[in-house]
Image 1 (cartoon, rainbow, N blue to C red):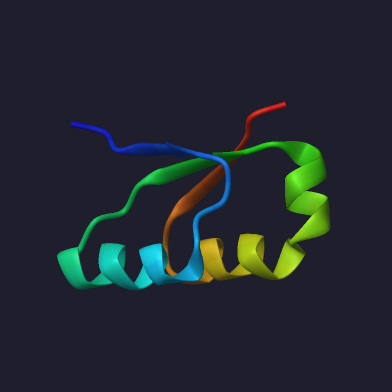
Image 2: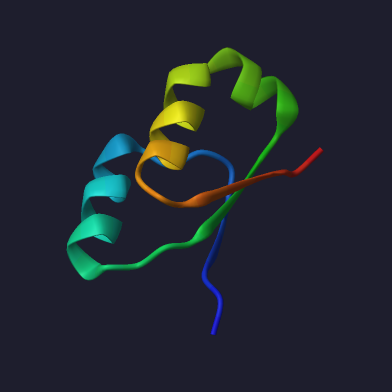
Length: 54
């Protein structure tokens, strides 16, 4: 089973995913990712996959 999430999450969601041991793939819109690069770095740092939704 794969868990995918469109667009960037609220940082609290990352905490919930960590607590559950879940490692989803996030699909982010390019301009959203450019607007919040710190969130993209956090997604990667926590071991999740990050892909382009554009």
